[in-house]
Length: 291
Image 1 (cartoon, rainbow, N blue to C red):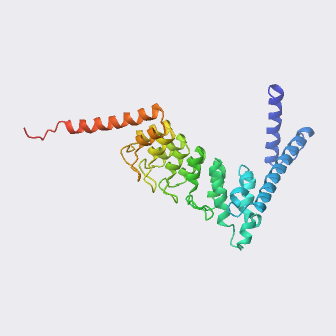
Image 2: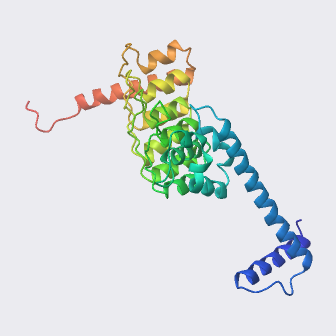
């Protein structure tokens, strides 16, 4: 509770922790405080056991196409469960046993599955823990037919903390999935301006890198009506004149989708500014020009 009673309890807890840390016994500590501390630890252990049991149950019944991506979700926020999964995942995952994965340490499929879920659920600490086991930050799961990286998953989910951690650890902003989508394109499809900004400013993402159909990040933002992401792309020099394989440009996509006025205004304003800039360059005084 707040107030003097709460302050006194906090002080007692601090004294208890200091005494235990120094190897001291429990002498002098109120018995009710000791019991409260023990009860709290029991509750934490029971919660961790519950999460792990739930993960085991889901794993046992998960369809083959999902496997550990479903199995680890209940445990992804619990660091003790993450450690347990990474330590004994070979025994926890029926699919790995069916595929004959024995010995040789922790199966990569389990680690990457945990990494994917951590990216989707924005669990920065879990990502850090998994990557410290030696998993490549751009590792693609054999179970993911789309060829996505963890950064792509984080970007499409709007998981900003996960994006930051993956970028900090060297995740590639230029990687492409099976359809040619980059992390930046995934962020645009996910309507995640925070991730768009992070990828452009911290990861050096190319605002003009298109997918295999020629669709650029600006085209995606325009068709989805995401003016914040579009303005970020414009400020980082995206080319609004390029066209995809169907001969659509960003302005055309915005209008075809009944685009909001602010989207159309942003594109037309940027196009006009670019045109005026070109004219200014052509009219610029050349000191070497002959009369």
